[in-house]
Every structure is written in C-alpha cells, then in structure tokens.
Image 1 (spheres, rainbow, N blue to C red):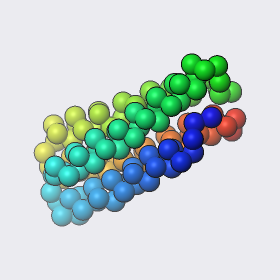
Image 2: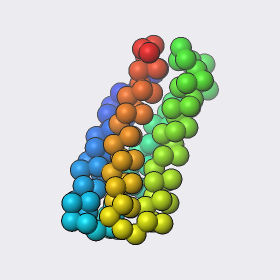
Image 3: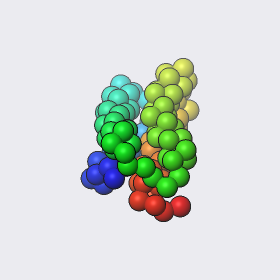
Image 4: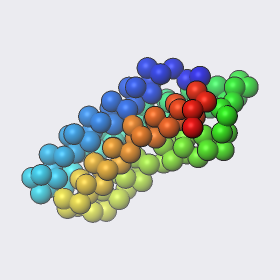
Length: 121
C-alpha cells in the first residue's frame, strides 16, 4: 500500500491551491503566475504518488478493483496538466475557476485511490 503521508500531502496541497485560487475568482481576475506554479508543485506530488503506486503494482501488490484503481490513477495524473492548459486558454476569471475546481478534485481522487488500495469501495 502506498504511504498515506504522501496521499495526505497531495490532498492538502490541492486544498491549499484551491484556497489560493479563490482569490482571483473573488477579485474577478485571471489566474496568476503563482497559481500555475502551484499547479506544477501539486502535479509533482501527484507524479510521486503515481510512481509509488505503480511501483507497488509492479512489485505484485494489487488492489481489489484493479481497473477502477488504474482509472483513478490516470485521471489523477492528467487532471492538473489539462487544467493548466484550459486555464491558460481562458485568461479571465473563469481560468481561475478551472484551477479552483481541478484543485478541489485532487483530494477526492487521492481519497478514492487510497480507498481502493485498502479494499474499500
């Protein structure tokens, strides 16, 4: 099972990014450079979480719902790069909303990955 501390770090980083992304939404501004840096930092943690999970899978460990687990890992891996692309294409307040929503989805995906790994449904 991947370490819970890494999953917790990813979830907390996602929530912090969501809180920080609320500022330009309220101020009716596009996301700033700091938001894109935040996306990159959270994505780095997501990559670490994904690599650890893939390492455990390669080592012979398998969650109960294997295909669902892989689906959540793929979604977690591609979510933030897609959000960054869409936020850059939308240089208005709605770009910040895209970052905010993606950052809020990260903890949910991490929770589901951990639930599936530990056998919960």
